Amino acid sequence: MAVKLVYVARRRPELTPEEFREYFADGHASLLRELQAVMGFRKYVQSHPLETPVNAAFAKARGMSLETPPDGVTELWWDSLEDLVAGFSGPDGEKAGRRLIEDEAKFIDFTTSRAFITQERQVV
Image (cartoon, rainbow, N blue to C red; front, side, top):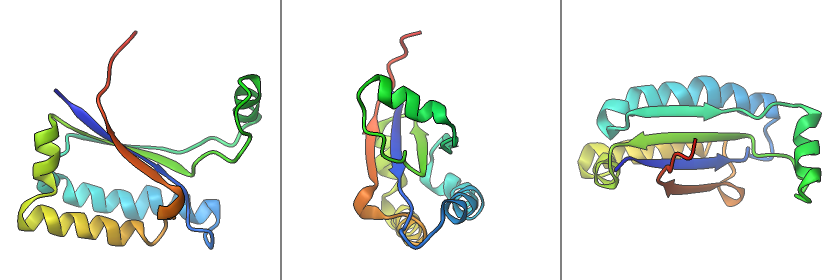
């Protein structure tokens, strides 16, 4: 069954939101396109938060924190958990994983970001 890596990213404190978005959308995305064949993921999507008062209204109506939303969310899909593990295994997969970490360190604050594996359950 298909699995997805969800990465909720916050920018490094010395970067502006614009600098983060620019690198995320161009530099990091280019690297993922390059590594796709080695890592074997079948889909890569970036989500960029909109700057709108609707975000605050949505959070306030639910009693949620009005803290700034994450700077970006990434989703990568594999056909199975085994395929995900294989994508990071062996010399090529390990090298690709190291390249990702090195690149992410340029613009992501690891201490405030989160990543986890999920499995979708379609409801509608």
